[in-house]
Length: 95
Image (cartoon, rainbow, N blue to C red):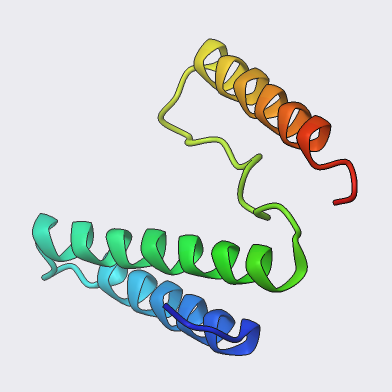
């Protein structure tokens, strides 16, 4: 995992660019598309982790719903996330 925010950003951009390239290639198979998606996912987690460790900020990706999830599931996940944030802030009011 990258230790600097600029490095994490570059890794995320690279993963996103590769993802688009793979998805737009009509010859790419499901496995290749799945690997490219997993790389974007890992890079986004790495980016969010570096931001949190360096600045204490929460992930910029928390509120992005999966388009494959129904509205009730998204609402449930959002409520769970909000409860976790509230619990964290109660334990660590200085952040």
